[in-house]
Length: 221
Image 1: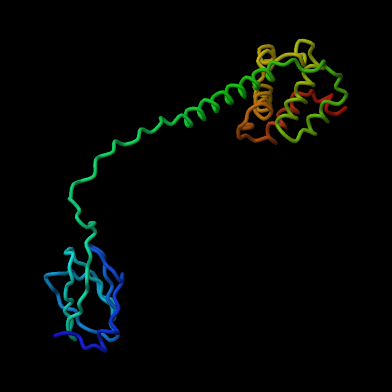
Image 2 (image 1 turned 180 degrees about the horizontal axis):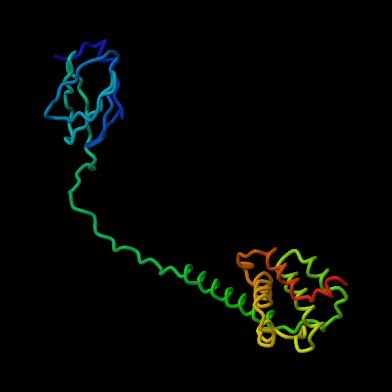
């Protein structure tokens, strides 16, 4: 049967001008039971609403427990469409991305320059030796690896002319085969020149070992 006019006026569906394949939401003023039909597909039910769709460009009757609701459906084709497919357009060629390679090249150049600077600074001559009046106090005052390495260098230069401040770390260690001095100088170079800083280590323990380089009579002076 057809829905009464009063109830038909209260039934709203959207979109108001559906086309083939569109989900059509039909809102009823009161709960109804929507029955299956061959001309449409029930997609979902939500309270007083039901969502249906059809793939035929014509008006179809939505069967409900209170009667049929007539819903017109338009075709998506234009009038007098020949149904011939549109000509294929070849895909547009995309330019090969060069930005990632440029960024990697810049990063590589910056890394090379950074390491070159580290090597230059490591081999740069240090200031002329200065007289160490109280080497024990200078070693005790060191608060990081760089300060401890500098204090150790000054003490060695003041006590042995062969271990001058102008020597690089490698040259000094060739002449001073002491494991404590080697560890102190390498940690100091890492803190001063390496972007990652000094390696993990027990600074206080190594500082005490550095004080052991000073003869007892000098420490007591």
